Image (cartoon, rainbow, N blue to C red; front, side, top):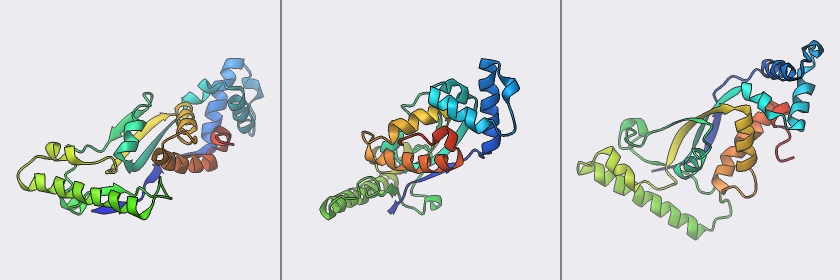
Length: 209
């Protein structure tokens, strides 16, 4: 058994200038103000678009993001219907094989619940040990992977790739970084928001300000 941390990786190369220019070009089509495009006009234009709520313009840019998180979190992610989704399949990922070091990985519950008591953490850890033992036992007596996966708990680590346009990412981040979001999805959502604020402040800088 391995207890690991979650992670986030933006797969799409982010060329900030190119993205802002593409958004500006599309947006100025609406207002027929293409004559106002200059070398440095895109940043201000995009900030204005976001402030005005004209977010359909930013749908012209897509980003793909890979998350390493737990299965409870991915159950929430796939409810965002406008994302394209590719997720690690527990039917085909055999955690008794060498590529997984012959063990099940679990996302550390302390990430989402840093104040968890030692007793509760030990109980969770014990459950993860039992989960792995049950999974391995089913495999050892001839059960197939798609049967063994039924004992995996929500803390089991999984990878998922989501692709969506910038408007959908803004919706996702506003919803999943709020104080009302589940603690564990908030962890990875905040990791992504921190990166996108730095890379594309015109588009994401206002979220949670």
